[in-house]
Image (cartoon, rainbow, N blue to C red; front, side, top):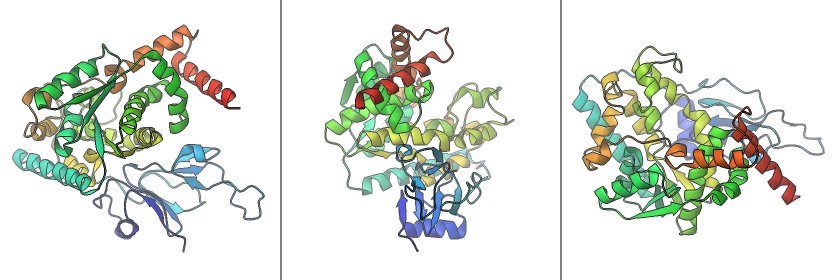
Length: 382
């Protein structure tokens, strides 16, 4: 039997979850090798990669690694499917072939549903506070990161260009909460330097992923330089609680016919998104902390009825009701911009791409610019 190499949970918990096919066993996710099997939790909260075409011949002169937690450790990495378990070296199983996202009956008593969600959020924050880590919060001034900051009582850091929405929103939210705030002001040179580092860390060069990862990376650098061990984020709230416009309008971006169905689709997008964020934070030397992705919170979210998720008047209604018990109303009810837009990173990266000759008339011009910076960095290293 091989020595277990598991991240995110202890081996005994994962063994029990395997034996019982328990999808939400009270963790914040897990992945790795256990008793000769590769495993990854149902939401894919811990990245796990396998070699697309592994050389497992023991007599081979240069045997490649079969799996890794980082894509950079493999020659041709592929994400191991979330919710799956399979012997090391075998063909990839289907997503959710061992653990499936539970289809829970919605709680019709709104007060009971909100109370249950509050208990779950407190369970998640208490689990974080049990660990002996110095934690800071990536703070945008929105309700997600504000609730995380309040429950963890951790220092607040915001990143963005000086005239950005996020910096102003974070300042006003911190003032309303009576909290100090560290502002990480950006300039274009920060993006030029960080782009190849981020692209290598996440194993992706597409513009959207890099734009989302850059603010996390740049705020993480400052947090790490200030001596912290971990960076807490509000990731998962939009997917779990109905934070996107598409779940209200049920437009062409969703297949579902109900808000709850559209939210489930969003939750199932997390296994592809979360590795980007986790790898970005880890690349700064920090441990990622995402309390809102704790199993207890996921289970409570899956029990919310449509009208505690989102409608034309309000998104993340149930979550905001919980947040209002801890935050000033102006913060609990505040809408936010996606981080790449709120920080102005997307705007400035587009500007840099055009200045470098990658014009908007070119297909995917920012992605081409990112790839060029990555190539330049590799050439310099050689």
